[in-house]
Image (tube, rainbow, N blue to C red; front, side, top):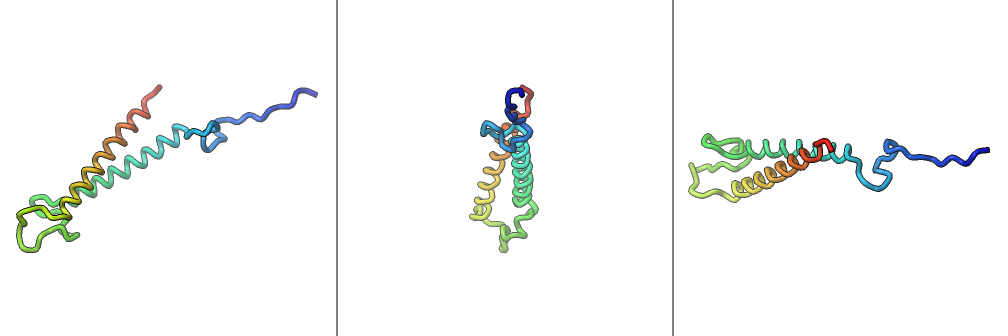
Length: 104
């Protein structure tokens, strides 16, 4: 009889890496989903902004009933802040995705 065989584990058989790390394929997939989600959120938030003709924000209570208001309302300021935060998240996720997909 020969020596006992030791079971080997291939990288494909480990859901999380055998050494406890996340494989690059899973990291890239999660990052792509995150990037697409932030892009769609940014698109929706930009469409909510009121332009010269009103915009979609009038449908959700962002428009004024008595003509044009002198200052921006709290809803418009919060919408601006949320749009900027979403744009920054989209920018960073895109840069990280571009750097992670480059060949080694």
